[in-house]
Length: 297
Image (cartoon, rainbow, N blue to C red; front, side):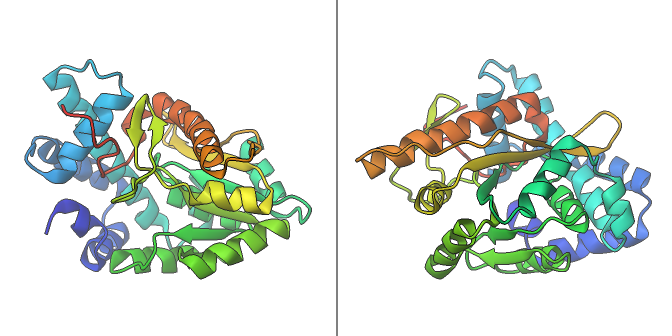
């Protein structure tokens, strides 16, 4: 079993829950930092190769071997920190809320979700502890439908169960749920999904960090159908160890008589916003799949 499958398996999530219950956070941070150093040196591992490739692109492509290894270690180390923070506090809503700054951006997101006259598609990159931030926002009153990976198995089912316990509506994506999501948007609701995980065998490419990438575009299609804007939401961890969310201004969908062009133009406008978030926190971008098939390092 490779590391990515282990992380998302029932066993991997189960071990995370156990560590969260019995291990003090400081010890957990040290353990994950040590483990990250070991993982980063396993250059034959598919997940390490993917992280190295992704980091090479988002950091400008001019990294030395040592710099590339260090940036890869930073990703795994931050992932471990997020893992510990989430599972250490999962059973305590007040601690979860205390880890996430409730500022103007958080307040605005809650306000959007409770405004029945304002529908919007919230899209997110895999930066930092977005799951923890999403759960914290739910405890603050966030109302939203969350679209997740289709046909979830193993650990993904456990993750979705954890999210749903906060009152969020968790829905794996399929044709039926896409129709329901459009209806939710039209009725003034919020729909949330991640949009930076590449899609296998996808023909349509979006330019992302100046390279073509097979990224999802269903959120663009649904936003156009529902006639609502897209808002980019991301998470990041500050030097003080607290997490915060960042919100873009609403991005209105541009439409013409060419639907295929509309998908590409709007999709790349959204990804351009996400590029900026990743550039701000490259070591917190927890993407374990190769995003650019044409890039060789």
